[in-house]
Amino acid sequence: MNETPAHGAPDGATPGAGPAPSLRAYLGLYSAGFVGREEMIATVAAWPFEPEEGLDEGHPEPTHQDNTLSVVSAARLLGQLTREDVAEIQRRIDLRADGGAGGGTERRP
Image (cartoon, rainbow, N blue to C red; front, side):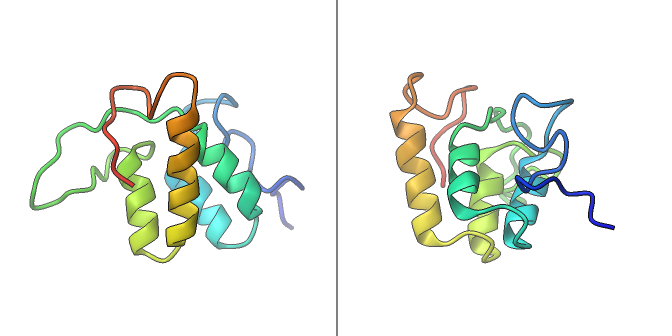
């Protein structure tokens, strides 16, 4: 039985819905075909990104954090997102009213 709602994201997998949604999990749903491209781009561009903590040059992605711009970069490297997806997400982030990624994060995708 598939418990994924018709809009693609499970309960709590979109920003503002439920406790601490996971961008990593949401992008996994997108790459599995449960979320449409336009919905994914709009959702990720509006995502409440967290500041990255504990970055180590030997391990650039904070594995304990699921809601950082590094997750978007990793999804690109893993082939879950295309170069065009990332460019459109970045364009929409840049257009946000708060002027960027928010949450004190730096521009990375």
